[in-house]
Length: 226
Ligand code: SF4
Ligand code: SF4
Image (cartoon, rainbow, N blue to C red; front, side, top):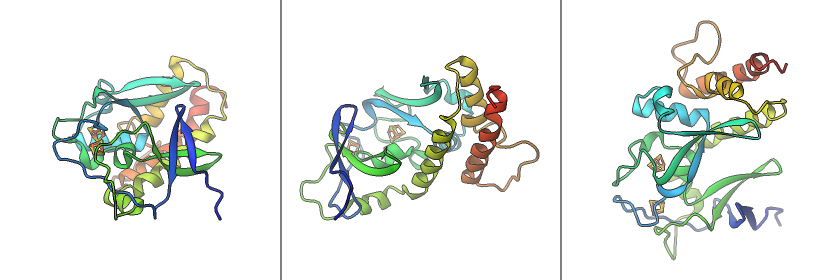
């Protein structure tokens, strides 16, 4: 017996909950497909770890990335989003130009990950159209996740979700100043992740975690909401 839901609503549409043992297989044509996950889709909300991966993969500055992404605020919380309509900036027509640094949403597609009441679920949203699904799959969801190398990104995403849930408790003002503070302290991989000397041997993951810890302390002071 399990308490996990069978289905969760996302944007008003059903998303079937899946587990690693469920049969699942996707065959992507290297030339892309007609129902492509890289085109004609909703923007991908990026976390700072994914931003750092993209900037490293393309050797680009955060300032240059800001010319590509869209920004917004949701209940005062600043967001950075990668548009996919009509096509993702990194789509070449034959594949992803930042494949090693692609975001978690791209690795999971057509699966997704949602948080409900503090629990994360893997889901297969009916809105995620994919022409590469195999009718009688023999591999499993777990095999697919391993093939897409999602484990580290899921761990980093969990840290991000924890950070967001803590910061959302602050009385953030829905203002440009809040956005500036987030771009500087949270999102930009080009600003130091902490004050003082930074160990140059820190990995991207260690810098991301250090940045979140620093931002938790500095955001309230910067925004004068301590
Ligand atoms: S980052 Fe790569 S895999 Fe993700 S939507 Fe863009 S082109 Fe596609
Ligand atoms: S995951 Fe599906 S939609 Fe995306 S490229 Fe592969 S076959 Fe196409």
